[in-house]
Amino acid sequence: MTATDAHTDRTPGRRRPLPPLPTQAERVAELLRESLIDGAYPPRQRLSEERLCEELGVSRNTLREAFRLLVRERLLVHQMHRGVFVAHPTSEDVRDLFRTRRVLELPALRGAVRPGEEAVRAVGSAVDEGEAARDRERWKEMGTANMRFHQALAGLAGSARVNEFMSQVLAETRLVFHVMDAPREFHAPYLDWNRRIHTLLAAGDVTGAADELAAYLDTSEHQLVTAFTARERDA
Amino acid sequence: MTATDAHTDRTPGRRRPLPPLPTQAERVAELLRESLIDGAYPPRQRLSEERLCEELGVSRNTLREAFRLLVRERLLVHQMHRGVFVAHPTSEDVRDLFRTRRVLELPALRGAVRPGEEAVRAVGSAVDEGEAARDRERWKEMGTANMRFHQALAGLAGSARVNEFMSQVLAETRLVFHVMDAPREFHAPYLDWNRRIHTLLAAGDVTGAADELAAYLDTSEHQLVTAFTARERDA
DNA sequence: ATTGAAGTATTGTTCAACAATCCAACGACG
DNA sequence: CGTCGTTGGATTGTTGAACAATACTTCAAT
Image 1 (cartoon, rainbow over the protein chains, first blue to last red):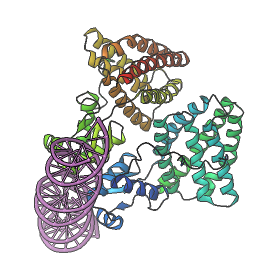
Image 2: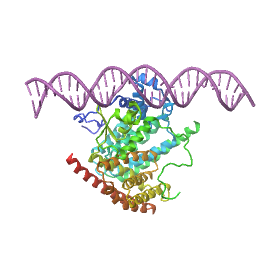
Image 3: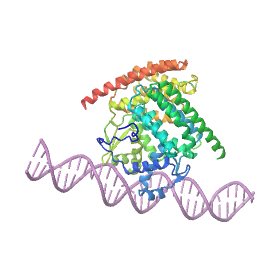
């Protein structure tokens, strides 16, 4: 296994004791989640139960179970007797997302005591992926790799629950990026920063890496909030 | 409003713009969640759909929506074609919960720049509550107050998402405590620690407070993991 | 004691129905 | 002209029953 092919969390060699067959609702939720973070549905759009359950080939009840999960994840919003809508994050949401990411990413980075660990290599491969995507001008993949980079940073905490929470936070963050569709402008400038953070981390300078990451988050938040408040003035 | 009556998050003076009427499934989930963190159901117990939906006066479909939510929160576990069971945390879960709590609580405390804030007073009233409950020998309330103390610590981060995540983590932690039913032994020794942390925090010594909290978490985790591994040897 | 084959009980999912509510169209009225 | 009820249609909220799929139990045979 080389350092660059860690783009899958599965360990194909050994099966888990109980391959938990997902129920129908969970599969639907997974599919909708992917569609949402891919930007398949525009923000604020209502998702009709009738149409979607027809489209997905499941019953209304099953679809509603999936809806409930995605609402809890803040990817959808629910209004009584009106239905579910694609979430439309505000600038306050952006601020809260970055507050959360500071909590999740910075201490994980500072606590990364052993630079040679598997988790650190995951950070490195995400950086590699991002640069490769940039060189090939695959902007969407570049955004994905950037998200994986930050997921890997949170992964340094070594906690399943933190990882899961971080996944949700990043999914919501992708929704934010889709509100203003320009992955190139919002991701490309940060790839060099990612590289620098990983270099410091791999060298064992977690404090320096954390300082870089803090500056990164400040800059990124400022850029996004600025763009958002401008957009909110219009709408 | 005195410092000791902040045991409610509601601000009864002003109504929220839209009091979001909870749907039936969410109400059922809320009720079951309360029952679970109160220890109404023993761990590993299966929750029969037929019996519960009869008991709660809702349909199976509605109950299943609530189940799905609580499974996502790790309070219930789901096994295909076998039903849902009350979660039975392992010692590894305990370790992960404490890893998570370190991530959530320590940076929030270190980042508490303004000691006079509302959020800091919330920490103080949780401490007061805990001591009052101890003096009255209300052990269950004492555990509740202790949880509220840590919730308030995480609240110092000022993030709605972090607060929500912390709520889940603490709910799961209460499940852990219920596995070994002895709130007095597990909570009482830490009340003095809580007081000390708040005193340091209110004095603006966030570093000192964080050091105390770190020691607190180490001790508490060690105590719980020890008790758990002993229990796991039997079962 | 172990194995294998019914039979039973419970969950997984769908469907159809009804009540509750929102929304758009329409008309009355100042 | 614009505002305010009313009305009718459309969509969601929730239920109950039905059937399929699977796990558990029982029991007989080896």
